[in-house]
Length: 114
Length: 112
Image 1 (cartoon, helix red, strand yellow):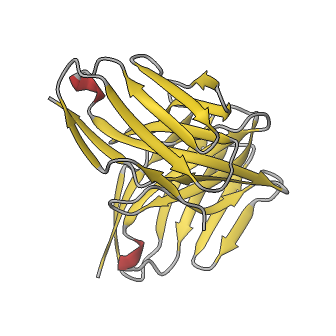
Image 2 (cartoon, each protein chain N blue to C red):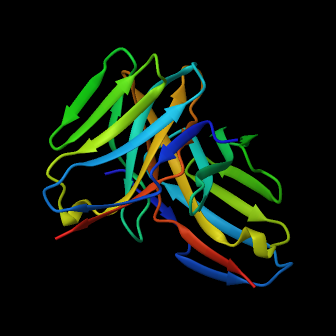
């Protein structure tokens, strides 16, 4: 079974704090993703990485950065947390084979910024 | 600007009824259309997917109907059960790249 784990299920931080969200996958997938999930807006892509040290901006990268030093680990960094970054954050890794494509998601981290 | 529009945002269905969720897309480069199911406290998980060379795909009680000319696709859940209560996301993937574009989600409640 593919497993994507996220370091925290719930996190409460103060405005201006630097926040690290960690994600680990155990299936040697090359591609990893960070999304935020907000009601009515679905899942919006923040950043993705297609290899170690490689990253590309998604639809809403402002206020975020990422780090991928090892293939299995993808970190999302909020340099200076703001209240509008209160959200559910989902990490995923993806696999493609013989025309089948699937993203595997972690359980999410619910971040509250006060 | 949402490239994949999903409706309705919420849906209540009686047990045994049919649940229907609709999605529309704009980008003709999309060539893979999955549906994801998310239970409370869990991440989304792939439910069923279709490519535009077929108009329908069925897996158990779940069916995707695809209309390429209208750029629309829908999920039908037959004989809906309380255990189907979850949030459903449609998505689309382009023929190049590894990214999914998600719809806004539909929160389904199946009443016993």
